[in-house]
Length: 337
Image (cartoon, rainbow, N blue to C red; front, side, top):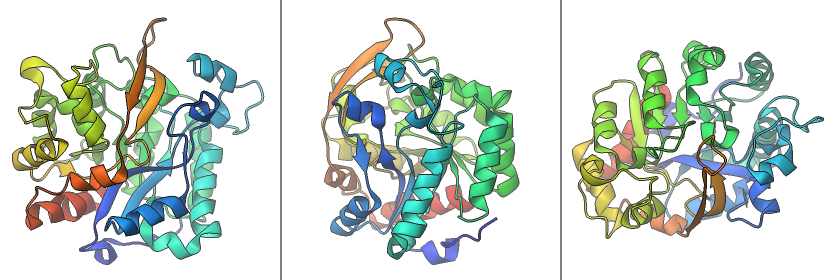
């Protein structure tokens, strides 16, 4: 296993973005959606322009294993002759090569996670990850069940070896999470089944768990769970629009949703040891059509636009101590225990 090039001690005091993508989202590009790609060089320029020192990164899309035409139509079906022999094998390798072989001058700015599909060809995925870790450091695993169209609860059965791998390497798992009642892949009620069955693995639940007060409270009571603020600007916009993606009524965390900065301030005040700051770069904008569940009509069109500057501005109303917590000390506990 390759030695980590960045350590807890070396990251002390750094401002860390806990959630960002690198690579190509091929389905988005072919459908004329936005965003569809991000390079390390581009992300590094945004870091330096906005006072961010280090980003957790992982591949953007999973399409190299799937039939792209069916992906365009909204179905995740393996290709007859896939470019990637198993889910994410090619994307994970390309991420590592971009950072360590093509842009080694940037390696001090990035913490690479590998992506995984929670239910398909899990043993073969792990074989590919083990080969990769012989040459490159792996800091965690990112799983987006909705992109793979595979329920997160597969991590309790077919996908359990992925969780066991994380436990054996003492690395965390970052999970896409939503409270959309239509969602059969990444809903928080399913995510918590996985989290509660694995108290010795560290998890981060993305996107502020859709501002669902009950699930936020539940996460805060658990020693192995953190919550990131990724795509805060557009998540708050969705709240103002009363989107099904965001908790509603008495379930919604009480905050001033006219300003995403005030929402993040409220979350940090309520959950000071649980919240991590993350941008979701470049998916802090989201102009796409996405399948939200397994039914034939479970699609939604999104037209949401924000910037990296907006995501960094989510830190504006925090005290110095709070900023250190959500960009460093909490993040280091998630990353390293």
